Image (cartoon, rainbow over the protein chains, first blue to last red):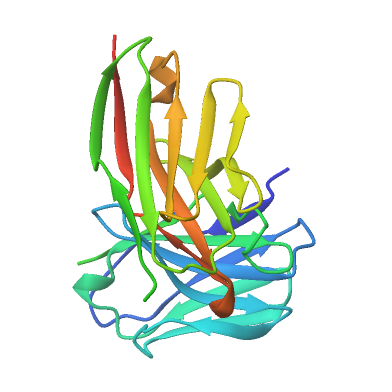
Length: 114
Length: 112
């Protein structure tokens, strides 16, 4: 049973398009996250939601919009894709926020913008 | 500011030898220090963590040490094996911001 799942696993698209990545966790966790991992492997947090409410919004372009329909799902919609958006995007979840609690990562979505 | 520095960026050790990865953090209020392992093409997974009320924690071949005064923490892997080859990330929590900050990663290669 997959604890944190993401779809799609790979996404190849043209510049200017709009795309979405979906994430679901079946762990009953309260908090979910989106991370971006670039080609140099830096893992940078983008957003964090706790019980469907946004609690962290790093300096991410407003072309990126997270949506949490319920606490088990956190989707990421990206408008007007740019070349620099190419990266691996990881969803993660934890119980009661990141401090003192393990974050469980999804398998990642490799986004390639051409 | 929020910063976790990690060294070295790459590390190659002979199978059976030990590997040490070091990190420093900037927020004196940090209390939670996890270490994640990411194999090629896979997701990061927690391998060990330490909280500020202890100075050392060990789990089989891996151990972490924490020096809160110096704001340093380290990962030690003994008797390295080929399956230890991966990218390792340290992290520290920033409770005031409800997030953890990751170091830049160390690519560990085990030579046969």
